[in-house]
Length: 171
Image (cartoon, rainbow, N blue to C red; front, side, top):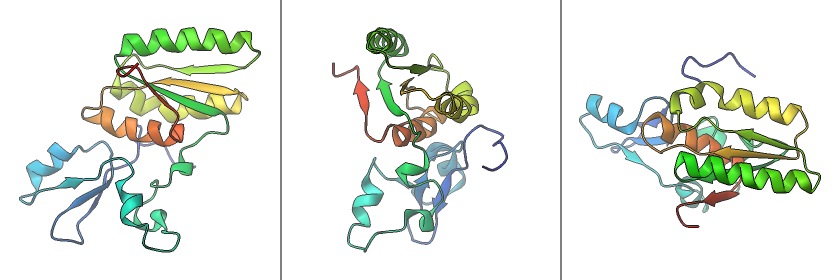
């Protein structure tokens, strides 16, 4: 574990080894902010695209490209369920699901920043590790709007979920 990050999450990693700069890991600097400083178009990969691009290689080493690209890097020991949608909808759905699971004897932790990306960037890992260390069976997390810093934090939240995402916009 390294020192705390000033903005809560690790830096944006930009691959400039090609004619077209590519964001390998989202961070506090957004694509729009980078684009203001760079005359060339900057590209971002859709979720899971990096892994698809590298499938031709034997066991691609994502950590060799940039730290924090492997999903397991972010996953807690507890089951982690990410809820996406409007902040109020996430809060309500999580509270309801947590009550059901607690009645089943599960120990549930909740992470909910009420849509505040800056607070989430500063406290997400702290809360995730705290709940995991407390031995929670399940950690439920309310997602954020995927704009600016929220997109970078959501990238970490999705990785922590290992694909367990409840999309309330589609429910």
